[in-house]
Image 1 (tube, rainbow, N blue to C red):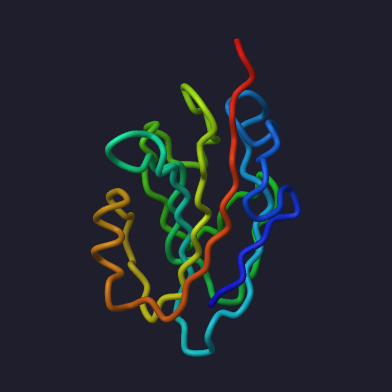
Image 2 (image 1 turned 135 degrees about the horizontal axis):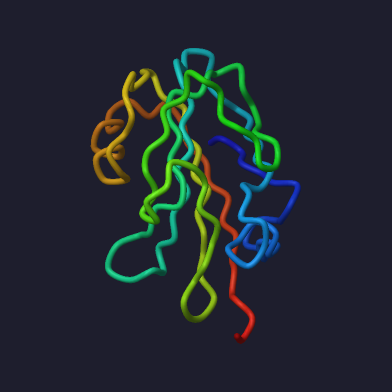
Length: 149
């Protein structure tokens, strides 16, 4: 199993507001290890399963090079990466911004035996497309609850 970590928050810990709609809204630092030697690409999917009937897509980046083992805080993705439009309508990381209560945010990293070669068209299409191509995967979960406004 891939190990996914962040220097900004521990597993099942609170995501600092800096990485949310209440702060700078930049992506947190993210690192992963254990990518199999036969992998051809890495993908990151960040979603909120507590957002209602369907997980809210906060970030989806595919075709990351296997030599890459981390993204720094607020880092731009490499030029060869394919970024999907988030459910907020932007082509980059969209920080946690729950309307009510404490939500969980899954930072899921996939090691794939293929590359997409095109921009993913959302979470469900991406997951359907990588089915059968996942060599390994790992997840870091963080939580966030907005202060009373």
